[in-house]
Image (cartoon, rainbow, N blue to C red; front, top):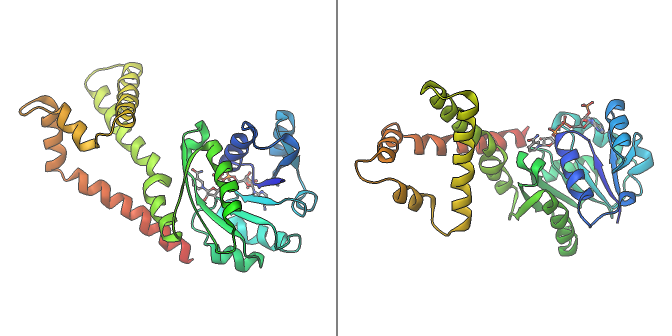
Length: 267
Ligand SMILES: NC(=O)c1ccc[n+]([C@@H]2O[C@H](COP(=O)([O-])OP(=O)(O)OC[C@H]3O[C@@H](n4cnc5c(N)ncnc54)[C@H](OP(=O)(O)O)[C@@H]3O)[C@@H](O)[C@H]2O)c1
């Protein structure tokens, strides 16, 4: 099986690196194509990939094609691709807000998988949700899941509504965590800690809390109950957040991202 990644940017390169470092694909079977001559040069120097600068040299003979260009580049790309593809090829889109139906129409093909990746894929801790058109077989789906898992883990979802929903949770989610981290960093600096100490205090607090959460079956609320004693310091912070409706505001934010993903998909 030959795999082609179109677009060697943040996401395309992340998935290519994940696949290249797994035992699933040899260098000859992992192809990468980009239009940017500087990227081609860097990738060739890197040596881990089979690099292409012309679509006609790599697309026709690829079995599985990851599409990792920005959504606003896909119309031109699809026009170019259309004349070079065949019905057996499977297309996996990493593009936000581009529906399976529009990919099928523009490429005049049927076998399409749509994914929603997230940024921690860059460090092997990503979560990718994915769903497929009905023409994709169970075996093809397993094959793609194994490739997606080389960047972390993946979740199969029933339909594209859940791709938009996972945009609101995992796709945009890292930014919510960074938002919270930024606020805590600012609070630490205001209390007089150095930049370095603030960073250590905040990042280890996040890391530690996540590790505790992962290693046990307690819900986040159970952990809050364990940490917060009545009349204590943690309870003072939680009361302040509750008084300011932070819980509801975070849910509203996730829904705002979800709704925006739906909106973008209609364009
Ligand atoms: N970054 C994220 O956290 C994230 C999260 C979820 C989903 N996504 C999705 O992932 C996709 C890629 O995002 P990204 O951040 O990786 O974008 P990116 O860094 O801009 O990478 C896209 C690459 O594709 C190249 N390209 C443009 N047109 C092309 C064409 N016709 N053929 C081949 N290559 C072409 C671009 O070259 P130029 O630079 O010369 O244009 C660039 O190297 C997007 O659709 C986005 O919605 C990204």
